[in-house]
Length: 394
Image (cartoon, rainbow, N blue to C red; front, side, top):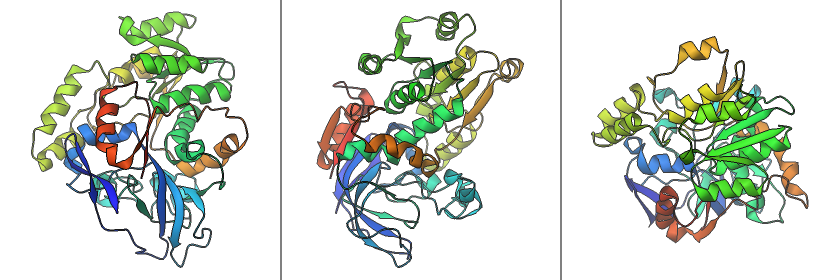
């Protein structure tokens, strides 16, 4: 089959790789009909290469048709249409019983000290072949795949794989009081959904912040108040002034480790990229290599007693944090990989009706064949051609 493989920094290629097959009785094989490029994939393209090896198959936002199931998969059959969550969970361990599916003890990568295995996402998370391919082997298929209606456009359901439940969790964690104010840093795909979900779940005011004109315009089209951070010298100060001199009740950081405006973090990431893999892994894992400008701005902008919710990915273990200010201002901080299946039953009814309250059909800007995935990665990373979200068609 054809699949998108990682070959090096900013070097991904579509190659022929062996077809997946049933390896465990809890496996399923899914023929992929649509698969998206995630902002997290760009971390692999740019920063997290030390944890990849040439030939690794990327992608963790797939959906398709079940081709084959293992003997212990009773809830699926060939022909079922499914979305595949990005994290792999068994549904029955101690963590899964508490709906902490991103920490599944059956698939935890204990050798790396990490949580549940992820599709297409480095040796840190199991080196499981990803879904930017024609076919995908799905472990723990007795629980993971989400059955969806046989009719309706793929893009009505595709984002259940990651970015829609990720945004839903971020908003739930933000815990904005009904009628209160939510600010969303970063209006990429997750940030767009955070802003829309925030309004849907009762925030009285949602403010989105970014510096890319197309992203600002898309948010504005969905009734979100926007701030262009490239025009602001003091972003936290502007937010505080804008919201009663106190700041928003809750702030979501939907940007993560590669934020703009963090020269020291960018230098650390660049330096790590020049080292041999083992040294680069040590530096990435043990040193402060994240670009923290957005996180620090979120912490400074939120009102006293407010909540900051992180959905953006961070990777360093020695990042400097303004703990005195966080403590003094009584800030709550919530974060983590999304527990996808925890939220999908709440979200699915919003996708199955005739209306589209979350605007899922107004996000994708580019749909391209899998063969053009390398060009799509470059376009997405450089934010060219108004690119906000790319869907690949195998």
